[in-house]
Length: 321
Image (cartoon, rainbow, N blue to C red):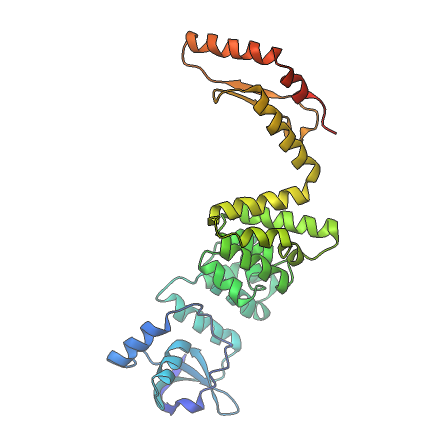
């Protein structure tokens, strides 16, 4: 590509044209301080459009930093020749990748902007090579899904408020519902598995009760949990998940509560554990005990003998209705 070095007025640059902008969540203060201290070392690369306005290809944040500093003129490199939008996007990507790795949101934005210019049969190979992600269809689909999220949630992915897997799940929801989940995750700081559990439970409740997922998350019971000042973040997270689970599986929850209450009547110690069948659906119970010596074993046997004679065991094993 050929360039012409020029000094132009910043007012001639269309800073709203973000066709080639891929940078996400950079630190403008650090860049402003650098330019204030040593000047503009690396001139931005522009293209002059037919309306004679200049389009930024590389250096969006450099231009905006100079504008913030009150500069009226700026040294630039203007591309010469008739270049396609794909050529410009490639240049912008390689300019960014020359000094850093694109984050997953920038890769998602790159997929969104490049896909229209690349034949479908070559899409995965070309995009993975250009943007720097593995040449894997499932990875591609996950990253592509992130482009459908609002900016706040995309920022939440880079800030590790929302896990990648949970963000992919949220891309299937309306903007309003996805934002409701995001606001909840900001408060609770849940792990990836717990985020996905909350998403699944709220979605299934919404389907069964003919509601929107966001309406489930705005329920009075859930909001009451979040507003309790005596609870720490982990306690709130546990109670929110327990509430959603009770609402999604009321019968199973009652069975678990009944089992837990009757298990206490057996007065087992921490070395003997009785586990019910999954979902209380008629499978076998599991009894597990730990011991270190024959003396320990004899003590456990006596406990089991007492347990067998305890009427509480019969009540615990009664079918749940």
